[in-house]
Length: 325
Figure 1 (cartoon, rainbow, N blue to C red):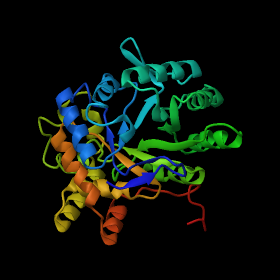
Figure 2 (tube, helix red, strand yellow):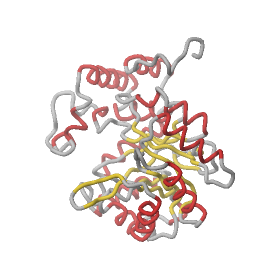
Figure 3 (cartoon, helix red, strand yellow):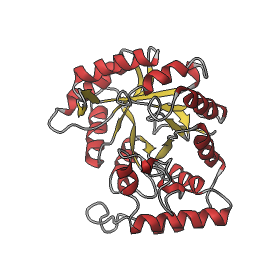
Figure 4 (cartoon, rainbow, N blue to C red):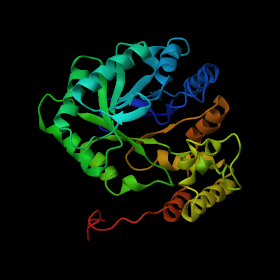
């Protein structure tokens, strides 16, 4: 698998990343081991988790060293979403973030993570407090690089600009955001902000909760994510008339190219401007292996243009001023 630099930093990752949100929940230890083995054998290096993913970090930590050497993976985690009782809340205060990082390191069984990401924005909390945790994490060696996640355009620019404006602060290198043929909202402002400040885009949900695989064209399979009550809303959000038209276009392109829809959809987002890597997740190793074949796919320009057209979103004033492209 080919490697890419994350934004304008020196950090290199595989151009497909492995997400582990289901590990320890829908994916047991056996399947997780098989997934990691398949991913590493394919040349993958970027392994993404989060403190809020339940048992994921512990399972990732147990498998690193057994399946792959620590230095052979780029280990990324996130902090900022915490459990309080049975509810999830956002807490990106300096104290909570650093405590969460220390607990993540313990669960992962490592002294450092390669990429530490602030999981979300919290209105009302001074941004400099959140970002001071980033500086402390990097200065102490607990994180090699830092990024953000789920920030809109102005939030991305403000955070990255703040870090670049003050000498000695740790510059942000990435932003992890939802991006797929069915969700192109980041093209309004986030992509431009990331490009201007040198952030690489890590795309989560590049297959739109599995909808872009085409599995929901004729109904909801009983063993699919759409059949799970707490996940069905993620699937249903893409099954409107527009979404079905996009999925049909992906499937038609796949048929014409002799590919699977998953390969077409993933290759499209992987090669979008500014994208470092899409992050793919799977319940089983078999699903993951069928996804990783997209590494060898290069879509013809006319197919890319057709998919761009059918999935286009409205971008106008003020994002696109007259004469600015």
